[in-house]
Amino acid sequence: MTTVVIGGGQAGLAAGYYLRRAGLDFVILDDQPRPGGSWQDYWPSLHLFSPAEYSRLPGWPMPPWPQGFPPASHVVDYLTAYEKKYDLPVHRPVRVESVRRGDHHRYRVETDSGVFDASAIVNATGTWSRPFWPNYPGMRSFGGVQLHAADYRTPEQFSGREVAIVGGGNSAAQILAEISTVADTVWFTAREPRFLADDVDGRVLFDVASDRARALASGAADSGGVTGLGDIVMVPPVKDARERGVLHSRRMFTEIVPDGVLGEDGTEEFDAIVWCTGFRSALRHLRALHLPSTDSSPIALNGNHVQDEPTMVFLGYGDWCGPASATLIGVGRTARSAVSALVKTLS
Picture (tube, rainbow, N blue to C red):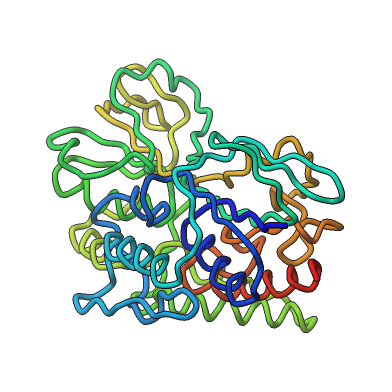
């Protein structure tokens, strides 16, 4: 029987690398028309938080990028070459519509290209396809443009406008930094933004997350991991925005009105609102399985697999399925341990 990997981005490719090494029969189903995962959909100016040598999948390093941190296009090229180098069996575009239980502890994977019978499932669908829009009073009455960070591309579309940026994370800070060069911007956050020190990048964040995981496994007190350091990485565009004095946030408004927002100081007019409010795990294809959840994660896991169901594996969704598992370097380590456990189960 075949192991079916759902998702052909960085997590799916890392899983494929270790499944190939283990000698298992597997297939990767990807709903994108081209390689590169969600990196091909990010705004063009987005860069990694780490140098190329710290942003690698297992087996093969990312080619160097001499001009600072690599852009998203460099990551797409790397993932495309990685998939080809290891001759990974990716089928695309194939959209998985539902996973159901089959006979003898197997699964039926129903897609728009037919049905796949699977002995195990590796879910690697990420979060990018599920942008989170908050349900805010008056959203439907707004007469201007509302855009989620998932649909943002370049600042030029906001040139000369009054723009509200909503959200307190990296996406909000980076998009604010860009749009503020061509438009008047106001940054709204639920709480005061927390900036990391200038010398903290993805390398440090991964090391801190890994140290926390090891400490918790040994029974030590919870250090808080990366949450104790801050939320926003000071990449060059954000540093530049700080120098220009545009990184000051305002308390979140209470209501949206047709020509702007209503806050503690009254009504303020805006032409556009950019919602940088995060994403949710793309797991709708699993609804028919009625998998258990917890207060802190969408699926209750034991390691990387569903409790009492070791053939239903999750990779790359964030810390709930492995330290720094949503990063290029972090997903490789979690994929190695997850596939190792899966091999023992299937054998």
